[in-house]
Image 1 (cartoon, rainbow, N blue to C red):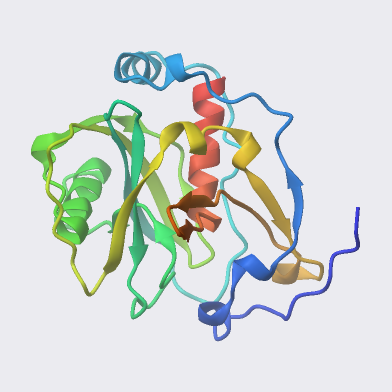
Image 2 (cartoon, rainbow, N blue to C red; image 1 turned 180 degrees about the vertical axis):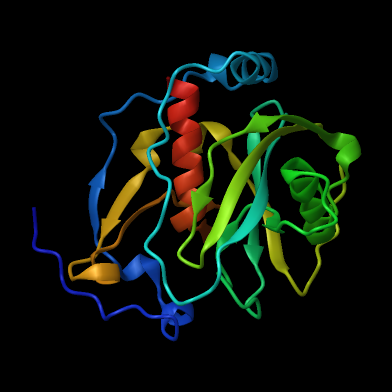
Length: 236
């Protein structure tokens, strides 16, 4: 394996300018099996969440950057039930204070008015992209994932019936798009990145790039980490 070049130190100031594409790929998990297509159907997903298997999430926490107080957050992982199931993702607006410009799930901080985590995820999906709860069937949730910015995120997994219309909040979302679920649940598309250094400069993470016509959708970091946990859950 080639030596990994050192990367400039990451801190709260430089995080916004950090480009994960510049960090070397040290491994692609093509030796792991993809989740069979038969497990990605709506009936199979309902059955999996109704009777969960014994499994262990692979990723739970990222190194902490800055002194932000921990906060509960929720994201909706919307699996659109097209002929080939897809996952609805967003590109965060560049003016966002955290994780700007990154690929993400609809979601955000849990508000005191939210009845529970699921309610927060549904509210955020409506506020960010205009995805109505009328089209959503919540299946369950995965274990929390804590981001570098100290958000303790609960991924809420849901089926989404086609026919919805999106209305993006321009202050929060620059774009919304769909990626085939099978692409994300195939470890041949899971790339491991690593930085050499100490502390935060020794970080590792996954990316799951997807070529969407002429545009590369660079799924990485917390979003890729939660998708990796979904892979482990569905393949257990």
